Image (cartoon, rainbow, N blue to C red; front, top):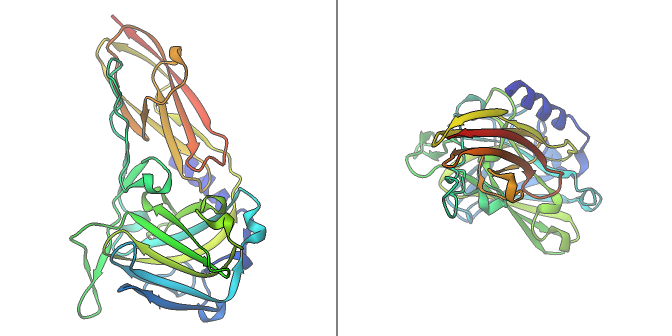
Length: 329
């Protein structure tokens, strides 16, 4: 399963990219890209040689909250007007949270309990990291730990809240601002050195459609004290369809048995939502949400459980799969 999902993501990342519309390319110094860096509030930002996605440099950002981080200024505005017209074009960010384990840390399935079939309302699963801020529903909680800067310029492991969400505020040359909140738990592993990727369709960035789409500044912060590195920020065309499956096909249960349902999906760089319907007789509805949910069947009968995997931004066709459940008296 992991190999299949990784292969799909690799295909997405090898798709056509738009270098001229990218915000920061790996392997090149910021001076060569016409980028200057300035602090935002009491945050800090600087070119760093501590880690690198490619070459020897990355951008290190220390943040305290959503209003303190770093600003990237562009000598030559980055034109997104052409790229914005295709709903498959997205901003792909490759990042690493300081102190995170190789391959992005420990990943735990998320979601919560689905309700019993006689419960009103059923309990909806939810993931960690405040994913609702980016329009999605929790898939998981990747335990990526931030770091605080030490007094002598080193780093110490964070003891307070960890970074869960990134915030980008984009300013265009007509002085209009657009923004997006990105839960880092939606990121996929980009290798074995702690780098992860997260993508957002350009058309899903709030306020961008009303601007002239010529980017002159990007401010970046996070939701808590911590440090992270930006390895690359580029425009990529990702038309990879959504596909997935559940951990069960057919089930034969005794009355009152509780069962865990787990969905696994892929959709290129898309952020996915997992919705579950436990009885198709009343139509396909959302009885629970989350990548992993639990359900107890308290009435005998035959049920069709439907898993719907969708793009949280609604730009791709959802994928559905079903499970036949027989509950014996």
